[in-house]
Amino acid sequence: DAGVIQSPRHEVTEMGQEVTLRCKPISGHNSLFWYRQTMMRGLELLIYFNNNVPIDDSGMPEDRFSAKMPNASFSTLKIQPSEPRDSAVYFCASSFGEVYEQYFGPGTRLTVT
Amino acid sequence: GQNIDQPTEMTATEGAIVQINCTYQTSGFNGLFWYQQHAGEAPTFLSYNVLDGLEEKGRFSSFLSRSKGYSYLLLKELQMKDSASYLCAVTRVKDSNYQLIWGAGTKLIIKP
Image (cartoon, rainbow over all chains, first blue to last red; front, side, top):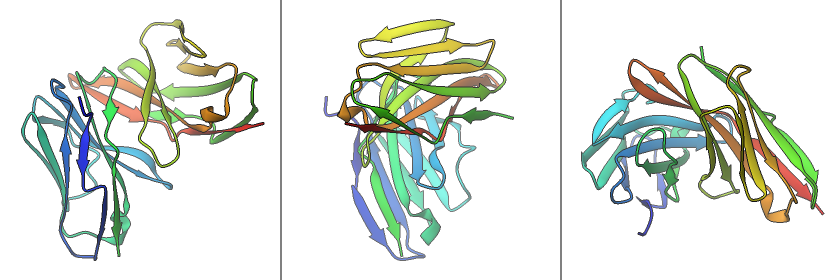
């Protein structure tokens, strides 16, 4: 298996623009997690899905952030409009369930200018 | 509320042993993960403890005491490649769903 796939790997955009991050989990995994990591705040769980259904989105910063999982092999995290404080590395991870080890993708480094 | 504490940074010598502690306060505790993250890379799984006691995996061991809200990761025969951040994460049950709470991580620096 190729592991968790994320795209793009790097994204530079201007404030106010829409940003869409994509994730393909490992085939057979039931849970998918979106994280944000910065030096100041560390690793933060934004949202996670079980069987394509959002279970806990309490970490989503505000209405500018939205996440979808239309099927078992694809998820998106959208930021609209983006702001400089959204600059971070965004990781997607998948697992067989919430209490199983998570496999992380390589991350998307987002820079909002 | 929930809280996870880890030392921010630790330094150790190649070939030595180091223990990284993690304390937590949370209701509905289910288990505790340890992950390793090298600079510029994604976290990778090291261990998961649910029951009290020590679990050993090669040079790495992880210990859990549920009654004390305490865990540690023990690294033996340290190698330069062990220089990384080590993240402690707790799973808990809330409203019939699992929540995962991450610590801020401990940056481990290995010196020759």
